[in-house]
Length: 317
Image (cartoon, rainbow, N blue to C red):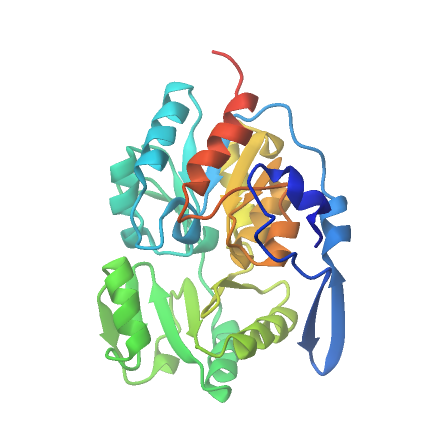
């Protein structure tokens, strides 16, 4: 992806290396190459009107230390004053989203589990999707085969086989959820809304994402939410469907929605929304799938994106 289209995104890139023109990966032994410039060139033009904002949380709305920057809070208030609803779409379970929803003063629906659960701040759910036992069996065995740490989530009930691994302890610190140690995840297939695979081997996780995604196409959504986290949710539990559901509830067309994100699980909402905005630290293929790029979540990227790309497209009251 060259500087030719990055240069118009509103922040300095001269001190950053130009990303590669292609993305190469391995899928069942075959070499594949993706032309990121072509992907970006095929995107629709920027919309004239924005009536709704849907935002990812980790890596996007939240800073690296999992707080909301003052600049972000200020821009959320501006959106509220302009009558623009903000909804959150996250890989997190609802319980790990609610404290931030309350801090932002949001009163409408939000999407957890990448869209597997759509809920109001009071806990009322309008959508709740779960994985089938057949899918769970395949996912469990694949992750086990590759030695990838595996977690099951049933609503906000988090099940692990070892509650004291470094990954579990880190996740507990981020989300505030309590891990529940179970002897055999295979006996916990009922009502599972999300499986998480965790590994520091980022190349392995990327390959497993590709392979599982192909195996489970139509039955599950398989997306990385970070370099070390792989999310498996029901087929319609993706952020693209979440955008459709959230917009429909408010009578807003998807092409009038702006979405902000930084990870692979944000790609489905970029493909649905009228305006996709990638964070500055996102991987090259995520940047290529968004019309515009903002600064990083360390440098007020969320607020800059709202000010530069969204507010000028908000209709006057």
